[in-house]
Image (cartoon, rainbow, N blue to C red; front, side):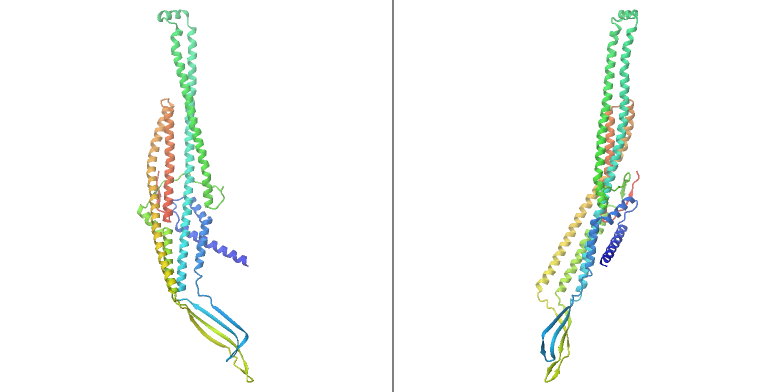
Length: 486
């Protein structure tokens, strides 16, 4: 039976926790146009399964149970039994029973419940703050995973371009090799000329045909060899770039693993669980200005609400301290048992007696009462200053997050414009390189610049979403955003 009751209690706890999580997700739900449905699903899983969040909720549940604890003091029962009956006028008294109930001053119990209710609100706001922190970690890790995936895709795309340039360089090298063999063939043809023509050429030019053709042929052969060496150098240079990029891709792939483990641990599931990711993140625009976001933070942040609840609880504590200076009243009854006593051959007395009783405490020691009142006043002052400090810290975090948001927007505008220009430049250089009118170094440098701009654009989008997640965590709610068309 005890195990069954424990099972029922566990089921009730699960139902209450899931109901609260559902309401929170409904209240703090992200608009569908702002977050993908997959991310919403992961946030729900994190809210349901994260052990730290469940522990925080259990602490809040325990605080709620304390509200039912303040009540009247337990009645006091006193019983005295005489081992030898005491002779009294009413007979022989054999026992004395006394029951007493003390009553605190009016309003004490309700004030205690109100104070415990406000303390439960403190734990509830801490639970909300932990939920916001958890959601921020999930979203931040999610965006980092997408960033790494996009960097891998961009690097692989650039690797394909390098392979294309390598094939072009190989073609140029092979053409140079074929051209280098033609001067040798031409050198053998003058040997078959007639002696008459040779004599005529000697008479006219004073030199033999071999001597006249020796210099041009050697220059052509040297030029062909230089062109062949240059072509091989280009091939090797591209191969170096390819190997460096392949190593970079391997490093990015290795960086994915710790992020995947972190993400799965936040959801309290297997480390090797698969995480389907979207191909890319779209740029977004915030529909609120700086002041509106800061007002939302001051209005909704759980830490500010926590100090409000703590100040209310301290008000109730001060009220209880004053009520403790009031007397406690008590009411009871004294029941005395008598048995008849023989006197002059007759049984005398023997009637039991009931005596109503009242009592009252006398709180004459005022020093401790005044000290408690002073203590609550100082605690209220401390809570007020801590709340002001929290507001200042939130304002600093808001300022940094909004600065990152604006920096990301400026960087996106720059990188998107630069990418378009560099892509046009690459098209022109690739055509020129194929026709042998452009150096390979210039093509590779331009291609590397395009890769850098694309990676910077991905990091700028990630910074945009990271700062947006920070602002949403501070505001404890989703912010109004919209997608920007490319």
